[in-house]
Image 1: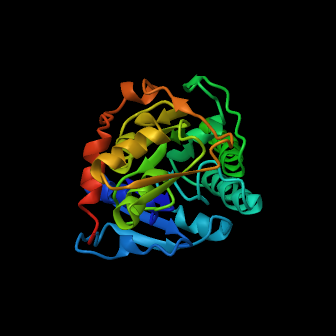
Image 2: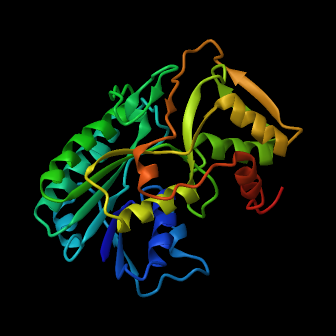
Length: 306
């Protein structure tokens, strides 16, 4: 099996590359990435990927380069996206260009290729602000941020492929946990960094708002399983547990007892999203259980100094 991963040098992409490289059924992995985040960690280190992985430095909007990259590819993971936070509403144009129209260009190219399976990584943020409603795959998507709208519009392009090939849309929870290519703008990762080095974290709003999360190791493991298993075309949620921001802060406080917590804009209304953990994929793949305290203690041990 020959695999192309757009955004393969990113947070999730890096860990997915390592997982897939261990699979003897995977002959080659093409990392298609514009390296816009300046993250080169996939390309360095003692863990060698020689012989199975190669890089194509390219843009999603470069249709000619995409078509060349798709030659002899069996499976595409589409991870590339402009990301800050799931509810970002700043600079809507760049989200539309990359997440929406970049995905459209990739879909056009795949339609003209011999690709047999397409896996698109979307986000549970497309459900919008649901308050206390428990969300599942049958819930109506009501995206209400530039990021979420761009991801949902991209989904609509991807759905066209299901007429030709096995097409999976995976709505992923907020990812956290240590990786050599990790993002520190994700809430749990940021809390850990700030608690470790500043002994202080900042919470926007009351902290009672909920988010659904999944550990990076769990996410990459599940995606690798999805690559090899026969799963019907469709839209699937993939997440771990839902935590309030205050619950996360309390767990971080257990690890850093002297940490100070500051609240800003406590009266400001914030998004609330709770995704059902009994999602469809659990019947098809192995999904690890979450132990947030254990995971964050492991995270703490990866910091190089205090």
